[in-house]
Length: 238
Image (cartoon, rainbow, N blue to C red; front, top):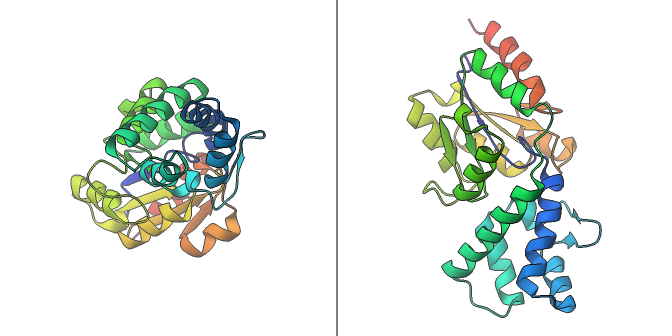
C-alpha cells in the first residue's frame, strides 16, 4: 500500500532527548527535592539518571515511560502518595525546564517540510503529556505541520499500547499499512506493530539499532532519511 501519513514520536525522534531532558530532569529533581542532596540522589537513582553527567541508563523510565510512570516512581521517594496534583506539578516543572533546554535536531524542520511537500499527513504520538508536546512544538514553531498531536493523557492510552496510532489512523480514514509509526524506542515500534502500521526505527535517540531492529520494518539513522524511504516504498507499490 502507498504510505499516506506519518506519525512521529517526539523525544529522540523530533528533538534531541538528552540535550533537552538531561538539563530539564536535573532541574525538576532539584526542585522536587528542595535542595536536599540525599533526596536529589534518591530521585536520580530511581530514574536511573546521573545527576552529574545528565546521562540515563537505557532502562530508565525517562526514556520510554510516560510522565505518569515517572511520577509513580518519584512519589514514594518523596514520601507522598501518587496524586493528580503531584502529576500536574511535575508536568508543569518538566514543561518549564524542558522549554529552556529544548533542542530540535538540525534536520527536523526540513524533513517535516519535505514530507508535507510530498503530500503526506503528519502527526505526533508521545508518552510526554499533551501539554508538554504542544508546548515544545509551539516553541519550535512546528505545530502547524501536524494534523494530530497526542500525549499519554489524551485519552488514547500510552505506548506501547496502540491507542494513539489507531486514533491517528481512524481520524484520517486510512488503512493501517498506509501509515508509518516512527520512533526511537521499542515502545514506539511495538505500538505501531499492534496497530498494524508500518514501524520505522530511528537511532537518533538512546536505543541502539540492535535493540530496535527486531521490532521494526525499517531502521534509519534519523528522520532525514524518511523522504527517500517513503518515495522508494511508494514507487514499488503496484
